[in-house]
Length: 197
Image (cartoon, rainbow, N blue to C red; front, top):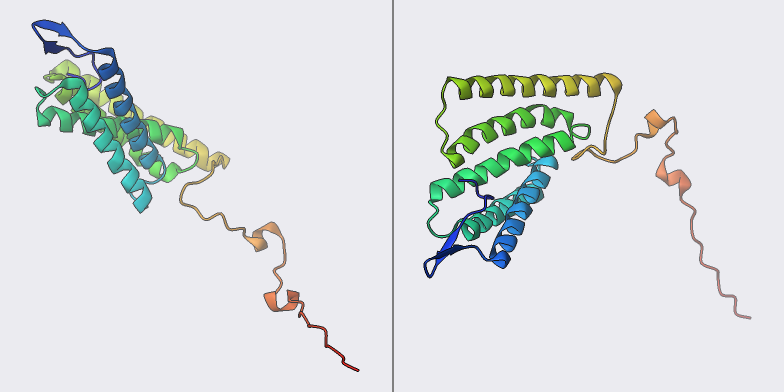
């Protein structure tokens, strides 16, 4: 069962799900996914801030899932849903920021897609047959080829974004500007002398 599916809460013998609870839990789930996506996009494995953002995203997703699914949901389903969210976040984050971080997106995109295949099946209770294995294999190989293709285009054309985790310092030599020693640019400040007659 999908964490974001329209699930039914049971009360007083009637099946219903209140709008407020459904809306709020869905918002929390999607906030979690967006936080996970942002953390992966900005370097999940390269900075404390991104790790904290990703952790907050996972917690939000789990809270939203528990609100949506109710107390009958097992932790296996909740954890599988959270990992599915990480996989989806890796796919969307990798695609969105390929020009900014091509080296990272090259492997994050296929890994995220592989996670989505495995944990989507677990969340929804699919049993893999030859048909499912064929789809999973072909789609994963296709994603790997697409990732390699995008990486090659970016490397050969020099397309760049705003490059996450790359210093923004200016290379004066590359820009053709001759650097001047700081000491030569310093103008001494001489305080005027007081002359008392």
